[in-house]
Image (cartoon, rainbow, N blue to C red; front, side, top):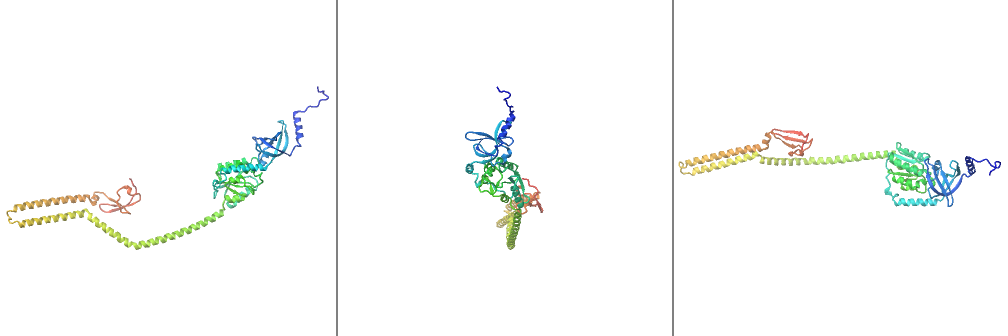
Length: 449
């Protein structure tokens, strides 16, 4: 039983918690080495995890602001050296190690992991030259992914606008160092591809140590570059080691200034080249016109020389054609038939006269002569009637007869050929129309087939 005089005033829970916190206060700026386990990110960007060794463990915590500054975010199974302080959270009754800095315990192991990542990506063909996207000759705009503060963004913009004053520049601010850097870069790359405000991407930073450049050696950033539809140019500062981002990117520059010169040509050079090409084109056009003029003059001279010969050839052809037409003319054929009939009548008359002359008995053969004359007269009259009928038929079937009935003959004005169907001509084609009396020149306005 506790006697009143011997009893001390009891602590409240809060008083005891504060006492424990005061006792732990000297444990600041401690270095703690251990393996990471159970890494989790909270809704506000804080991280909680466990640091352990072979026998013990302690809860650890990284505030969001500190997480953005650390070189890399610890992953489960990795051993790091943590700097921080011991704190007692009185509301939860737990002791935690509050981390404000993270360093690699074994850079050799980290490089081994990086080499393994490079081997995997190379086996996939991620570094192959044929996979690289072509950098546009003159982009509409340039997207810059870098820290919004510092000299990098200033150098890039100054270089681009010095070379091409009205070039569009779209800045996507990203975290280039710290635990959240890989996710920040990957998200900005995807957003740039979705918005399509630029034709080329420059991923830039001002260099740094191996640990500071670690974000650009992560698989998360490498995959985001590989998935990009837009070409990606890396400009990660003066570093001796090529990062994975450099290897998978479409072009690699050592400095932001070099990257700006790589993605944008000089506007003054383009104007000078256009002027030179314009002058060269003018010279080529002038030379071609001169050559064509000389060729046409030569052709004209040859045509002048050949014209009399061509005229004679055409005249001969026309004469032959006229002769052939005359020979085939229905009127000429009728005339030949008439001549033949007259010749036949003449021969019949001659034969009859001979018979009459040889007759010794004029009175006895008078009746026979009369019959012969009547027969010859009837036969000659029948021949004359038949000839008249044939003349009428020939006249009706001749081109002039057809034209006289209201028909016409249409000929192509250029070739002189007869147009027998609508498909043989076309709109705006010049034609000549032959009528029973005269000719008409016309132009085709409509064709119906």
